[in-house]
Image (cartoon, rainbow, N blue to C red; front, side, top):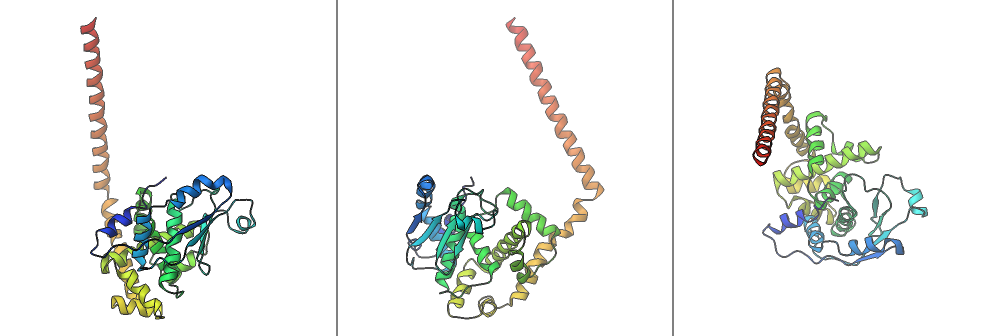
Length: 290
């Protein structure tokens, strides 16, 4: 299980903002066999939840949020693709989780999945139902649920080297495709949102959503808040990502390849000598004792 849902809370706690908002109550509905999990989810890190609220700009917790732990023999589970571990009923402001399914990417645990889905509810509440494009909401939910682990970073690096520029509209379409495309969509969505936050400020998401709450179209909200069009921001993002490709000829050149081989050989030789020395010391010790 990945233990990363508290990292965003720690990071946001360092920002010069007033105290975080109180998280809303969670009402968990579950069969008796899910009682241990229900107890864990009920005690979800409140600071992480408040940090997710702060990320999207939600200052008031609102009414309790219903979380339904659904068994596999239910009609709801039969109607839901097997690779889906949970989802949010946005209109109802409730969350459905499937505890008997393996938690799939981009989530590492049920707690992380719950925090992801809670972020969707928070976005709905802060925008008063004026939703944002799926890539933006999913990217925010990814940021809220934690930072990259090593596997995520490797995938992100691969996308920077190999992926062709993809518009945000195309990312939205990838979410409705098969699992590999969905995984790519999550990675790109999070990368886009993180780019906005690192290049323009951590408060960019909440400022954009605040404009959406006023009924401003998403593209217009982005233009007003950032001073750039969504198309301009996408081009800048991909220019940054594809900059890595300039290093491919260097990394894959014969000189670098031979240098890596030599370094590996020297490392192996050093380890071999260390093992030989250890064996020799052991022999000398045994001879002295005999």
